[in-house]
Length: 170
Image (tube, rainbow, N blue to C red; front, side):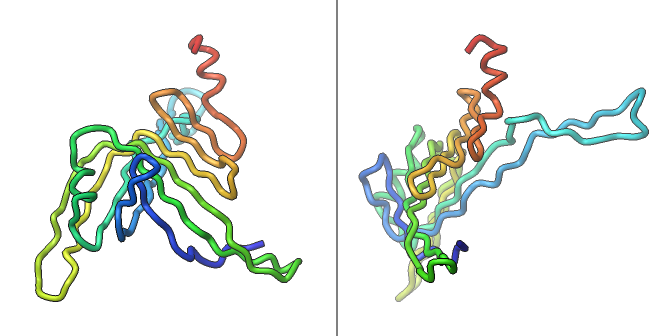
């Protein structure tokens, strides 16, 4: 099976409020790295701290400034859901089907760019948001959950911070 395209998607706040026509830039996961050097190592090596990621940023660009896009600049935590319909092909069965993909974020607003005003043109406002939580579900199955505040780094069936929570008595 291979993915072909995102057919369409919708963006919601709090699971019910449709936010309008938008383009979303998903966060980049950057592992927290340490440089190790010293006796027994001929030089430096870079090691990742299992389950630790640098800050995450969600970007949302709106076709036009609306009350929904402005509400996202309220200085509070927002729950954002991106629901996508992904087209995949199964060459073994000879079928093309739709697979649901859902991203859930808890975010705090960082920037709110108002866009521009011109005749017969969209305003193209946008915002960036500090993502404090990110979960991804493909075809109903949780495949990723990054929640630094709760020591969760779940990727493809393994929670890499479970032993850390145990060690810390959490």
